[in-house]
Image (cartoon, rainbow, N blue to C red):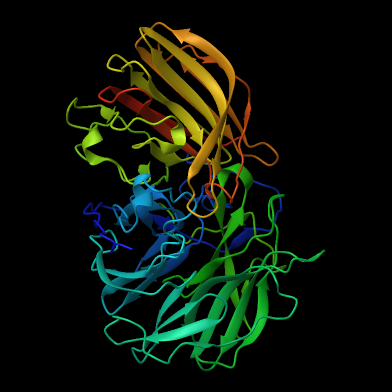
Length: 547
């Protein structure tokens, strides 16, 4: 395997966030995190109603820092910052690209559902540290990266063998450990260059009936004791996903175990996997993700109460609360998904490419005020198209539109807008000779197990119409309320009057395919010859509350 060449993201962004918590309502009904709510209103769960799985959260001074999994999206491993646990701003990424495998460039397979997983974020003696292992097949090396500022630039400090769902841990005596897998631990050399030979061991054995998930390690130390949080699931009737905690006076054990959260929320499945963090005032909070169908895995926020030396999560009844009191009032509103008129000289941090981008095939400068997407490779489907650019979708509902200039497309070029996932709802404009045809279709990718090769894409064309204008608007509305997961699709020739096309598309989450929440995706690819391009004038986004 070739060594990974990481391109550290140089962008450093000013940030503002805001935080607060404490239960003010134990209501089980589902609410809204509408961005128009008062800056002093309580936080409504989900804290982040968007795909933000495998969280690790730390606090440095007044700021909380969050890292999450984005797998095959580039740049990868987003770093977010907040002061109130309500508003999270994306301030940087650990890396621009991964290049240790040709799969990241759509060669010899893909990394759909793989790539960067479950990053561990730490702060020690004035430096930020991040540990993650690309989960390719076989598993990629583990990387330890460092930065003086969480926004970056991040640099590779060392690389070593693969650790699954690992937690980096700095002890009070400066000894450094990696806790990984299911109860495995090893000690690192003082310079973090590798594992100390002979230090690898098991610190506990799983229970006999615990045959499902037991992973997602997050290690902290509190009042002299070691606490390892993990997600657990016993595959048996009446047993649910839960968050468990292992506790010991010695990092090498013996450990005792307790379930610290076993709660569903909002009619969706039981929550599990995350971490705990303290506030500047000494209060503690849990941040745990929940699977929510088409939107992906969202983050819930809850109090963490230390009871008999255990970090018990949830309200007084052990449930995820609907509302949590703000930690800090008056902070400016921040969003995970934003509109963009492409007027800046650099691409906004909220955008991520599907796999590594081809840098020479996109531009913000060739036509100022537009994002130009050029065809650079002949492919026959969306899932192999380079330079597909994406942002998350958000619940409870959202709407986004794009304005496209089609005048420089070539025969056989396909451009458009998608609710993108392993199962996608797609608006495709294809040029055939001098004719432009808009099609709403349902597309499902079929991937090989080992190398995630795109073996086929099943395309079901629902409705088709001819487009006579070379300026066109496309719009997708998403509804992620309980039992919905619907996307509605529209087009317009003036940006004012919209015509629905196709059916209400049923969005899905499929861990066997892309293993992510549905995203807005803008694409442009060639099926005959390269050299054409489209110009995107604006991406307009609005989150909807559905109160």
